[in-house]
Image 1: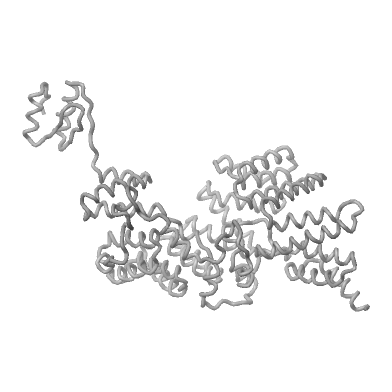
Image 2: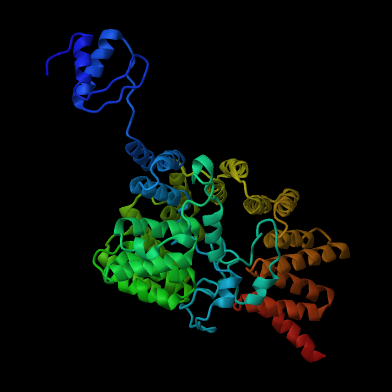
Length: 557
């Protein structure tokens, strides 16, 4: 191509269907030849070059960069011009789904609705080591404390009965104790209905599911799968998603593992666990299936309280996907829930050999070393988490505990100060103040300990450990009076009530109440309290000794 030197040559480009506009206006580029024309025009006359990007390419770029609002806005504008443009329709649907997508393998809640509608038969007296409904204990028989995972606090399935769940009061932190997980997904899908510039151009839902021809879209593989995810995650309509997955699977002659996985998800959300198990097992037989199939199948068995079957599924998945950290992490969690801590730590160390920055594995190994009386090693792991950039109140709290038990008192105070500054939730603030109180007791400052425990109750008035320790401080005062004993008794009773309300009963307040009852001559109170302590911790030798003493007193009468 010869170099164009004057405006007349540039004008001749216009005759070849190359268009440009005057200075200051946007130039529409239609071919590489016109790009050179515009470039020379810009050089000769010094005017700016403004190129208009293709809307579809721009929307795709925004979607890849997770700028979903801007992508939806562009798609909406183009759909107003051409409502039947499938490219923009599909891209907008994918962006709306990505906005509200949650990892439903991890997010799982079980409330009263699941307990009432669950017709799956589960053994009420399982064998030791085969159930997740029995509270975990150490090898010596003591209940394990100090480990908190999402979904393990006040879970209805682990409390033991629906009666305790019904007694759970509504608080600022449990505004919906009786709702089901399926209801949660519905709210996720309906919380942001489309309107105006950010959603639909008719101020209504983007897709009217009531008028949707599911049979038509089930025959379009590219559109149907994105539509299924939109209905399931964005709209939260499990029934329509199930219908689409069933027809899509039928259209693929039942050879597409994706639709079997989708059917299993829908059945699981509807509580049809056995049907979900059938679909997941069928999907796992396909060579092109992904790790999600085994994760969901293991989740079904965990819901059925069959952790050993879930472990077998994860191990089967590891034979097909060796070194998959997700499967290894789930194996480690199940072992930890079964009180097989050594096996759990071994798997977490294996995860670190494949993924050295896995936060869960590092934190769990650090916790294990802390409870194995090796706070120096736990401190090293928690410091590694800080170096990785994981900075939150939990890390600083654990660092403070490790520093204290490693005799680094100055660093412990600094870590707890940072933990208090970073904490935002009331229950977390209460736990931090409780740990500060324990450190104050260890250093001999009972006044500071009492203030710390009371501040913990200010943040969370249902903190059972803080009530119990306040009662212990009242009992251990020099020359305790009757008033101190009555106040300690009130603290212990409040601690026992709070622990039962939270669904995690502890034996310490019952044992302390039995001591007060024996000391004041109220043997009936002491007898009832020590029986409750032994029901929680059967191998507690001190409670057994009180029980034998009170039993002898009754026999003497």
